[in-house]
Length: 262
Image (cartoon, rainbow, N blue to C red; front, side):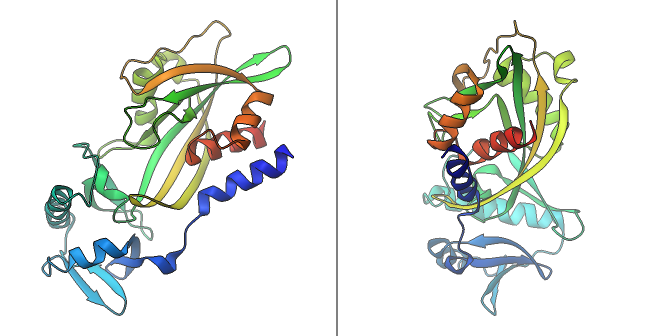
């Protein structure tokens, strides 16, 4: 039964129907998805968007012009309640074909435009007499997305000018008080991808995953107010909580990936 339940939990990460959205493109590349209520609003910026053959094309021709134009659009949409949870933090959006940066956009608007975000997640585990135990975090009730749900020990979006490793180091210190000397021992485990419909639009996210074996006497300590509590969970408890959908979808998939490898 747990195995079947975990398979169902994995499906949550691909709960997306493209027929419900309009593709967003740039220079012939499909880069995002726009929901119905936002499609109508974007007609107000003909200098930024062209509506052709069932797609919405971004018009500005260079990364800086795109960043400026889309930033102004996002701020206007935020004023109308179509973009929520403004963070004053930008994500770089990369070409799905060449990997080159195309523009940067306020984090809160990325899901509204269905763009691909990137994040770094850490599985912090401890070896015990009965097997592996994993440190899990409960998100603060003040979080704008998935408040109060369970999360990996560390997880954070990769902001403009950052990469996965630097993000991991920063978030590990802020979220769990893990010193840099310990974070340096984390092993890169690959990546998983989540593409699903969410209230904000579409969550399309590449999750770079890391594993870190922690000392038995280590105790995480939150320093940024984003974590309500930590818990060291035995494998049986972890599986039960995953099957019960107590984790965020992305953190749950990262944890299931860890279990499949260990």
